[in-house]
Image (cartoon, rainbow, N blue to C red):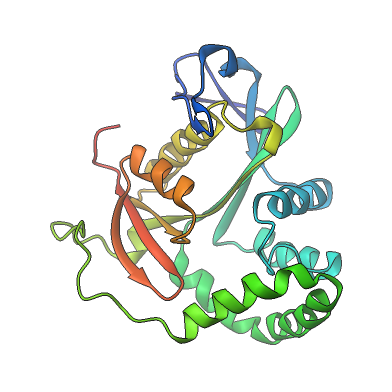
Length: 249
């Protein structure tokens, strides 16, 4: 159950986090978090943007997008944080930022909004060349990603595709990006974020939550499946996973 308190949303002790997988196996009880120490709130642009940039860089060290120059990173996050179609939340553990997540509540409108800002995004892409010069370790991952996008071949069949749902795009919210600080992983935060997203989506009248995942990110794919997401499609940009909210938790 979610309780409102001021500008924060607090989890009470009625929500039990599920242990996340770590490199050495399942987390034990001593790694679980006291739920009373967790707060989830909307992001404040001026106060939170730097910590969000730091966490996203640590989570995606090979990503050109998230490891761009500080100016580019701030501009990109400002576009996201000021969009009326996206909600960005900060997760605090004992009042310290432990992670963040993005929930896109209206993807069609969000994509149209980005089209209107394409000149600004084009400028940021041009600055990516400077990033690659200053951070040459990003060149190979970027080339691999570009190669996959250009030469992508759509598979003839997705074995676990769902065919018995006809949910329209306006009824799907998308878990766009999730970042957890390295020192806070393996403590059940991912599940707490998911419980929050489900509650928020139901509040908004959504029927499903979608997630686009890099096929090489096996840890995230496994975590989505453990939360009842099912792979429903594949594109040059990644694998699509959907969770229908009528599915039992």
